Length: 115
Image (cartoon, rainbow, N blue to C red):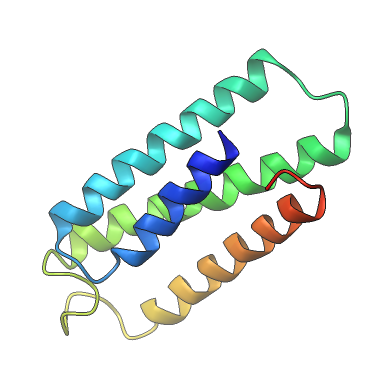
């Protein structure tokens, strides 16, 4: 499940400049991967609090990315890289911040050996 989440979030980031339909399709895939991992965590609680914290941070960061990208799709239907005037100038920095948070969450997951 962690590998699926990794793949779907990477696909979504790669699709950031595509049309809203492509971004929303990638968002749907990420949303499902998040739900699967959350379900697994709820059904099979991990006895290691550090690992649980890492997985929780990853789910949170991926959820933030999902929220962000659904907003992008609504505000810039032609895509974020298409010179859209619908997005505020500071939006790119916010996206970078979310991607950095996601990278940090993945670093934690790698550190504990899940991928």
